[in-house]
Image (cartoon, rainbow, N blue to C red; front, top):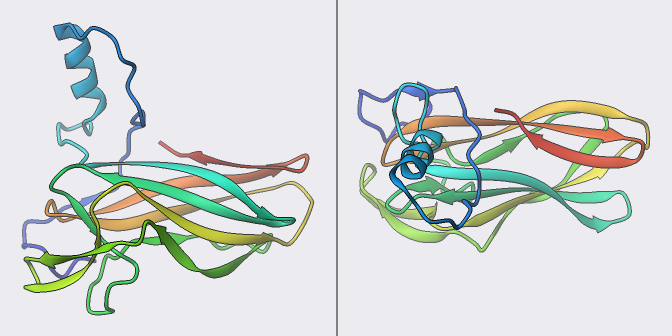
Length: 181
């Protein structure tokens, strides 16, 4: 188990569903509400306490920022990648491919704030609101390529280790990222 601050009945969750980052504004009848609730649940009925989306931002020629935008639900939080090494299950973007080089450290926009972490009984840095986690990458080639990566973290207080997979693709000089469901 990756999260040492959790209770013993924690579970690892690997299956994902696509969750829209925004919902259309329409008059909400009971069928619509039921559909939205179903779309925001795992296959076995557990609500996903966050949303995550991916995109690229141009930085300079040959350098881009992979942005993972995470939004914890109210009452949920994610231990920041800047928290002390004491915490396991901190947010991390993992990607390794010969076609890119990671540039600089992972950045949080806005920077995570300090919260009291009840499991460890201490203050630490955590993501509690909409945050862009940006990792700069330098392209090492202009050729077409594709590879997979992931964003992983423990969502608290649910205490589940989450893995959010994505695919980076460069085709005909166009760089894209797609969330895998």
